[in-house]
Length: 526
Figure 1 (cartoon, rainbow, N blue to C red):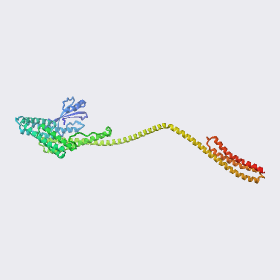
Figure 2: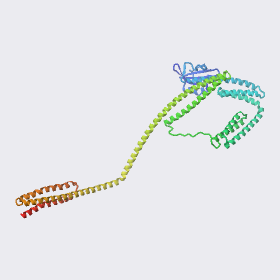
Figure 3: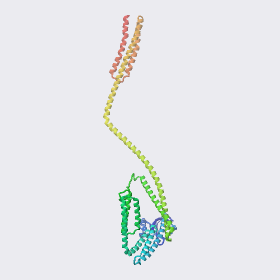
Figure 4: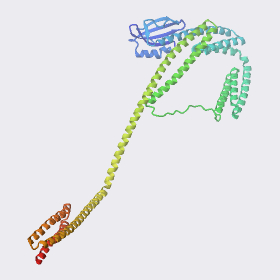
């Protein structure tokens, strides 16, 4: 708890000034220093923070102002023409400094009582047990105030040193009793060692561990109330502490040796990602909130304790100190609750930011998946194309051979189809010629009958009738023989076509010979 405070403030004209406050506990006053911004350089401000606040001498520059104000619980430490950004700091310093003043007064009262005891000790020529008891009672009273934190640490240290000096003087006078004290201390050491040996043997057997733990705690209470020399106390304590550690290790399932150490630090994921940073900050904030809750609860417990004790104070000064502590604790609780509210708001903000970041990470992951899939597809297509090109290059000779074979096979098929078509056309021509021959034969018979009937009168008419009967047959023969030939492809061989025509023309010529032969016969008969 420092007696000096340095903050930035401003005047009513909004001129920025550096404000320094120094508590004078002896006079219950506060000294106020103000430094305009023109003289408060960065170097000077840093020295004020590092040196002057730690009670190191520092020369102030010209242009500053000094004043003193009475320290009270109600009045403000700063004049009305000065204001600061963080008024709670000034308010908290005011309550703490009020406690410091009361604690200083209690310290002065104890020093006054200690001076009286010192005067009595200095007058002794032999050891006085009553004075020893009085001095011990005085130190117990001081120790009680120290444990309740009604005395500052520096005050308690000075009182302890002064009290120890008086105890040292009394010990010198009690030198004749040292041998007896050493003997009693040795007896106590032997007694504790025997009890500890029994406990250690039981620990090694592993029986009734909970009962052994209670037994060690009882030994610890006896140890605190037993007289030992410094060396004996240290040795007994080391052995008692080792027994506690051995028992704890045995209860934990160990081999009997104490082990201390923390767990391994394990991490996972990308620690530099925004999500991980937010999570670490959020976890740290939760830890800070939990610590702040515990701290506020301790202050509340202390407040309840001081409220109960204030009703049973041993004097006016002690009651004032407790009231000042109550005020200081209340101010501390208020300040911590404000910080806790800020932490809660930050926690809510972090939770929102974490959710937003998770959504962004989810969208980014989806995009990455799509990009990876697209890239994989592109790589696969490129690989397939490359493999196909390589396969084509390798199979090019095979493909060329296959193409040549297919071409040859196709040509063979075309030639076969042509041959088949020509064969079918030739068959049709032959069939047609046969049909024409049959028709001509029938007509010739009819003509011969008619010629026999009219031969005598119309020989010339017979010839015209024969000629007329021949004309349709020739026309029909030419049309029927031309159709198959016309369907032949242009690429057919000339030899095949001529052969087919020759075969077709032969029956026609035979049919043409028919009438001529009949005519000759008719002429003969006539």
